[in-house]
Image 1 (cartoon, helix red, strand yellow):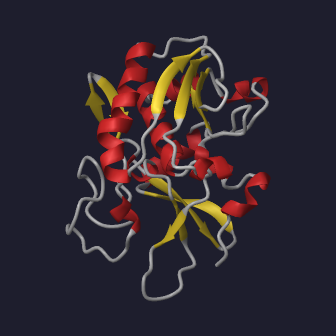
Image 2 (cartoon, rainbow, N blue to C red; image 1 turned 180 degrees about the horizontal axis):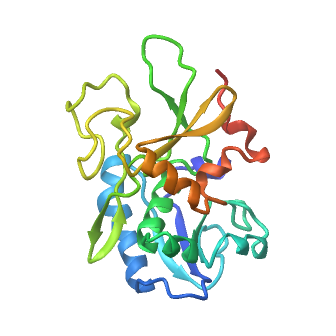
Length: 240
């Protein structure tokens, strides 16, 4: 993980290994993701990447692989890392389309979260005046994950700002997400959720009962939030 803190802008190889149509032009999607990192994400979070299309993993590059569904995980040999041990996002096309979601939004969601918290070990508390027993994962798209906008006609995911994780802000005092749908720190929109660590384990807080029901019906295997409960990721469990 030392390679993640070198200050070098990462390259991200996008590999389409899905056997089903993505319902979006792959070249246009990759171009939109590049524009998203440069023009949208970087001004807010200071994180960017060089995103490019590839047929296979590239030495030294992070990865984003488009697969049919989570059953394909065994063909890669890595749970959440490239062969070089670098961050890897997996986009499950069939699973995404089955629940009525857009592949481009899922890809943008995973790319943004991978760039901001590549080791999936960052957390924040919702309290400034006393010790908190709840830690919020730095998953910047989850709380607003059903909100979207377009770049060159390609749907992209909304995401929260650093201020969302800062409890000292008054409601309405600053911008908390890109689409300005959020009004206060740690607010979860009706279509969102957030992984939290409390009472010795990772769980979720949902923005609505309807979202919780949809979440329980989705295939979340290999989603970034599941990495935090992986036995290999003991470091991502905060100490109360």
